[in-house]
Amino acid sequence: MQLLKYSSVATFVVLLATVNALPHVAKTGLSARGSNIPTQVIAGVTVPDTPIVKAAQAYARAHSDDMTFNHVMRSWLFGAIIINKNATQRAAIDPETHAVAALLHDLGWDNTGELISEDKRFEVDGAIAAWNFIDTAILNGTAHGWDENRKQLVWDTIALHTTPTIFAYKQPVVAMTAVGIFSDFQGPNSDMSHTLTWDEYTRVTGAFPRHDLGPSVSKIICGFGRTKPATTYDTWMMPFGDRYVENYTQEAKGHLAIDLVQGALPN
Figure 1 (cartoon, rainbow, N blue to C red):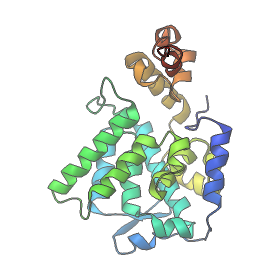
Figure 2 (figure 1 turned 90 degrees about the vertical axis):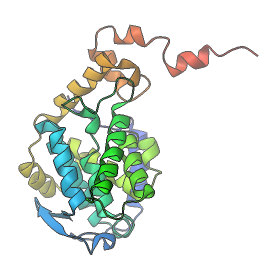
Figure 3 (figure 1 turned 60 degrees about the vertical axis):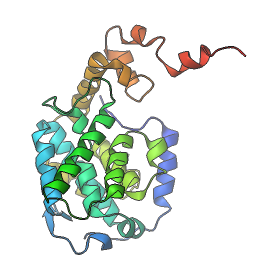
């Protein structure tokens, strides 16, 4: 099964038009906002190599199976490639904030179970876990220059990364981190900016194999449909429950937005 984290062709077109309206340039380094921080090259991509980025990689590794860790690494690298080709995005996006958001965006899939709630969408679990991670990094001296705004950008990025109809109209780092994440599902075919090449895609996936990304994500989402179905109702996850989770559709009745509207009190 192929999986995309966007809900409609119309949504794709809206975001694609927004991104493509910006000038593209062939650059491979960090943005001007990240020009004075340590860097490293991973799979041919220049990315920040600051203490909090290293810590975020380690934290993601500690709370991810191989499939999820490779997914967040590829998402980070694809996002960096796309951002670095766009002059406007390069000037607007802090690469350290982008790195932390991309690396931690699926903490809500935590394979240890430690970060998963019983009553919140996985995107919100991930956003809360990332916020707490940054707070800890600030306290132990790993994070430098992280104010409430940067933390909120990471929270918003993670909470909204599966909702193109909202993230397309948020700050550049929120939107472009999600564009990198989407690019991981079908490579250049799902890159909303149309700037990722197949050579770049192949180089990154060679360094971080996909490990059956689509079927694996489907299994995770179906798991939420069984263990905390209320968090999947009226979301992009609901079709997985409808198709693959026994009794899901019947149990959802009476708990959907349509039920609330149709059961509204009379005048």
